[in-house]
Image 1 (cartoon, each protein chain N blue to C red):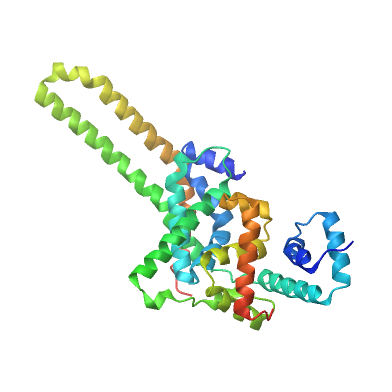
Image 2 (image 1 turned 180 degrees about the vertical axis):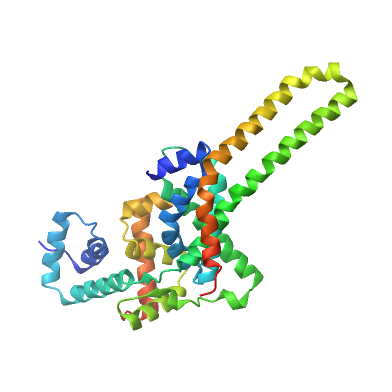
Length: 172
Length: 149
């Protein structure tokens, strides 16, 4: 059953089918939540909240609308709120870009250093770099996901790379 | 005619991102073959792309995903638990209306009462038959994951 079919079943009252959608996207959502927040527990809480919001929003889901961008939009807003809330509450223990062990790299040392530098970038820059290089999406796919023109994706991506290179002292 | 360094740098990222048209790729490669500075820029950009592409999310434990799924799906169960209370409330209000305005006047309200009751019963039936079969799996996940170790 495809994503549209799952949501159609949910809208017709078979809400248990939502579990299929959760299973299909939970890891992808987690990767992006972690990219936004840099903390495993915060990211897990945010994924849970995102899925609950999506579940409640099922009646308003328009058939034919792409499912992952819908979920990603909810996650993105939830992460932005969570980051703001965290900053506002000054929860120091959970405020840091602390969970470098959440990600691994084939080249471990470089991966750890890279994760550290990514944490110092603006979240929007990290998002661009993740969507392009970790997810491997095309400009057009990123544009559709973020609802911006492909030209804007190119310029934002270029700016994000420049900032990361500058932080890394171009030692990549 | 080959490109200038400035033109090449503007296109390098699109090339690395596999978004540069073929004709432009040839011009760019011609320039790169004769320009060490631009080749070095290309190597740096490729290195960055590779390093980012090598990042992998460490897998979460199945226990964590079970916790999340259970929390999300229990929302639905909570909603279901409200339905019988709404049904009981409707019947209570109907009886109170009969007492207050008299049985004959309240008869006028009977069609509305019947419609609400039927709707609520249909909703309960739908939930029982569509959702309940999913619950044993979720419940099993909780009991499995709450065991230490």
